[in-house]
Amino acid sequence: MLSIANYKKAESLEEAWELNQKRSNRIIGGMLWLKMENIRINTAIDLSGLGLDRIEETEDSFSVGCMTPLRELETNEAFNRYTCGAAREAVRHIVGVQFRNLATVGGSIFGRYGFSDVLTLFSVLDAQAELYRGGLVPIREFAVMKPDNDILVRIIVKKTDAVFTYRSVRNTATDFPVLTCAGSYSGERLMLAVGARPGRAACFDYETDLSGADEAERIACSVREKIVTGSNMRAGAEYRKHLAGVLSRRVCGDLAKEAGMKWI
Image (cartoon, rainbow, N blue to C red; front, top):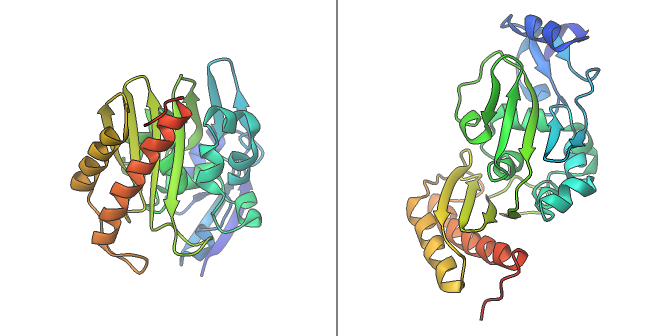
């Protein structure tokens, strides 16, 4: 059972940070995972009044506020145009529209959940987490950092000439994923992130020109050999290892198509 003694709608990030230094206090997002915990919170700190609930575009980047709902990732035209629809694909299977209207990007990223589609996606966007006191930290580094009492303010995605794609396998349409795979490709640099393994996304970088199906198969074999998977109620480790190769190969094909390549 979750119990909350006090509620505070923060008037500034400094106020939120100061309150969050007390271990019995907690930043709240959409309250979709937190409500299932058996804990007592002294003061629930609400960031919803600080203007961090939207995606903002500048000439060279996108800024995704920590309180941005997952639904905005799904529907924001500019962000989906930049990510080649990968943002929409990454979140559209998550429970339902009502859930995605409440769940926040900040909650998904800061929670560092092993099943997180959102964390897998941002791992290939060359994104940075902006922490209130800790500054900018690459998402890949942030994902393996030990959680602390800093505040995740927003995610910064620098614009590049890369193309992106996202794939996942689920036992049922709105269930947690069995395995996820996101990819980006720019010139000769290929970035892959394989998540829900069932741990946090594992990242792989390759220098390749994605010139054909043989190269995609080579990369798929490499991922399959390197990936560390586990078993849970949704799938076994060996099945996940097999899926890692399959999805990696398909992601390579998607990226080649997005880049205008035609495999014979």
